[in-house]
Amino acid sequence: MELTLNPKWGKLLESTVNLLIYSLTLLHYATMIYRKSFAERRILGQAAKTGDQKPIIIRCFDCATDNNGNFRFAYNHNVFGTTNCLAVQLKKFSTPLSL
Image 1 (tube, rainbow, N blue to C red):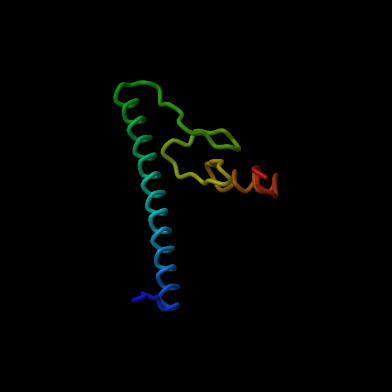
Image 2: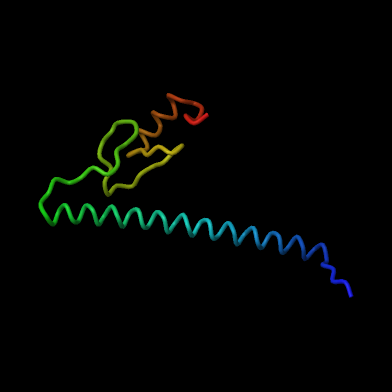
């Protein structure tokens, strides 16, 4: 006895698997971002508790200001502090820097 799969079910199964892989990828990315922000808050909290100078963990790629604890904008593996810095970078280089 040979088992065959209806072509409609094959496409449905394939799209379901692709959706599951995509969902797991997004979950992994969200977990990674959460862990990074938690580690940053922990480092800043330890510095505040001991009275040490606040460490600079990440800087804006364009203006080099401190971005600790702020929302960041990322483009082409570079981090920017404001949308103005990002816009300046996009005007300077119309093609991505990695090309």
